[in-house]
Length: 474
Image (cartoon, rainbow, N blue to C red):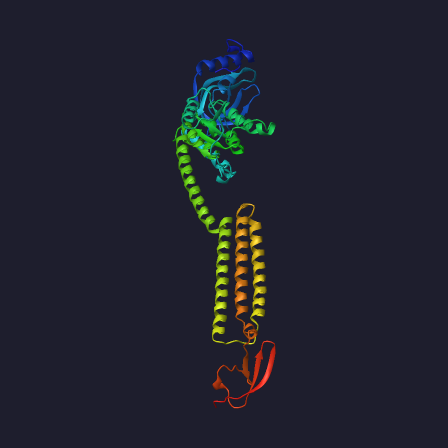
């Protein structure tokens, strides 16, 4: 073969641009639909919204890729370096650089296993930071006044929550509509949580929700990826307001569930967790009311019984008791006076007269009785003065009764004194009688007591004389 005139054998000469365009057209015609698997590297999101990346395989072969803004907004998960993905697109070239790449129309994770592996790696890293620690969980309010719901305003989750809240315990509800899937969903969810928490710092008068429910209805693993994104998990962790995570169905689990204060298996269950059943509350309140009423009645009964033990008697009862005691004392004095008179009468009857004056004794007793009467009168007056504000008439009646009693007592005493004085041996001597005593000061009452030359003292009314007595019979 002759190589000397090889360039002369070409039918047409191409410019560089013509060749680049021809290659571009050939690639685009023959590789207009390509399914390509590879690992993302060199991920870059331009300010325009276009996504630039490279795909490589296990042999480190690399092809650049482009996702235009329109297609990028429809991706259900966040792209990251190291993800293994399956893309569908067309091969094209960039003519000025003679560099071919793939224009990506759709992109998805290469199998559910790769997506689960990505979620598990992210869960492990966030768990090591402490974002899922139980000690960070906040208690839910027993009965929130306002509940904030962060979800799609067009989805069934919001309607299910509203229906259950109305049936269970109607409260104020504020909806914060966000996208719940797609590339923009994580950013919107995180911003909604952050903005709600920041409202209290801006204006204290703003009524914040007492509780937030963050979630959506069921879907595929890719549809739920927004709630596995790190930005959403951190926003839930940093929230000062308690959050219930309600993502998907009961079998679905997301990283938001681990970071939230409570995980609800469904949006409907989130409403049940957030609010008590008003019927159950009503029954519990009735039971509590009955128990409290019974306890109060028991306590009142016990207090009344204790009060009865220590309650002071009524004033009229005190006065009646004092009057009764006074009557008893009067009876005792009357009995003692009667006994005294009887005793002295008996002594006179048996002529057992001692050397004392009954008049002086009676005067002494009169002084003692007068002193006792004064004390009784003072005690009575003091008692009456204390009680006269409630018994204005009773003290007067008692005072008159007491005066009559004292007067009668004095008259009885004067009569008794007169009787005693009348029976005094001095009076007897005044009538001409005499009292004869021997030298031993013993009364001589019988003639047989006189012996021969008995020395005696004769007591007359006006004095004493000595005498010597003789008994003629002896």
